[in-house]
Image (cartoon, rainbow, N blue to C red; front, side, top):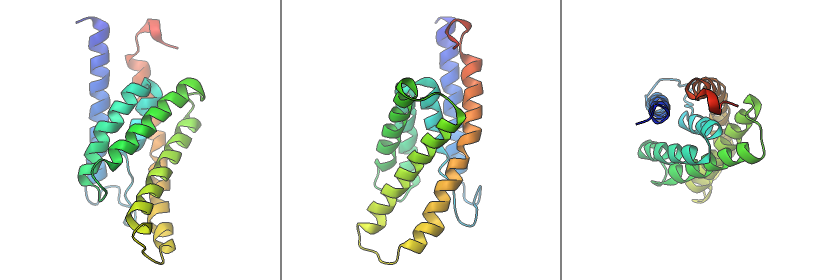
Length: 174
């Protein structure tokens, strides 16, 4: 194994440990619980990986940890995995071809992804079955979860930016 390969392997192991820790924190009852609202921590972490490492690594992390989220969510198995895969690949491609890697852009990508995920989950779990009077539920449960989750994109952005710079070899740094 070359030194570069070992460095990249260690980098992705650290990334996986951070995202797995975010998953554990996300699923621990009572932890980061704000009036019954829990953030989805795995999605901003995977999007930050996609932004800093590209669409393939981000999509792989999004799919694998989306499966983890599917095992504990109330949605159809594969819902989060498919959405996280699409969001991470899109975030990676957008930062390669359209956006800069600024903190604001990363936060907006995370906000858009969590909004679309929450809107689709709300549609498929409630609207599709014809429940009535859902506006209070959306404004008191779903909207605060979107805001609470998007706030966590800032620390994840800082962590993954630092790790990306730390593990990149001198020749390939931007």
